[in-house]
Image (cartoon, rainbow, N blue to C red; front, side, top):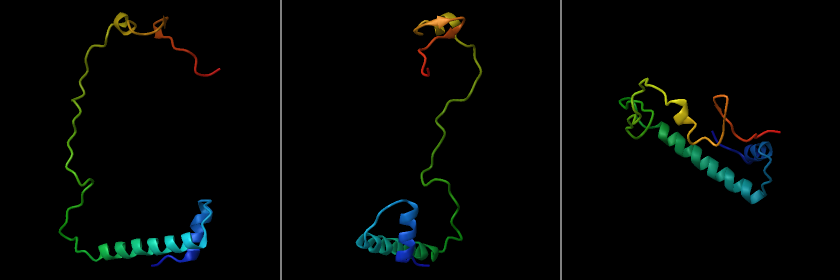
Length: 95
C-alpha cells in the first residue's frame, strides 16, 4: 500500500488545509515512509510475545474505597461563602 499525492490532496481537502505542491510532495513521501516502516514491523515474529496494555508496569495507587461517616453540615459550611436551606449558595453562572 502506498499513498499518492491525490490521497494527500483528498485528506487536505477534508481537513480544510491548503497545501502547496511542495507540501503535498513532502507529506506524500513522509506518509509512504511511515507505511514502509509499519510494513517492516509486521515482519517481526511476535508469536511468543505476551500482549500488553501499557509498556510500563503500573500499579493502582488509590486507597481502598471504604464507607465512613460524613462531615457534619456545620463543618461543611464552615468554609462555604454562603449557605441557604442546607445548600452551599454560589453566584449564578447563567443569566
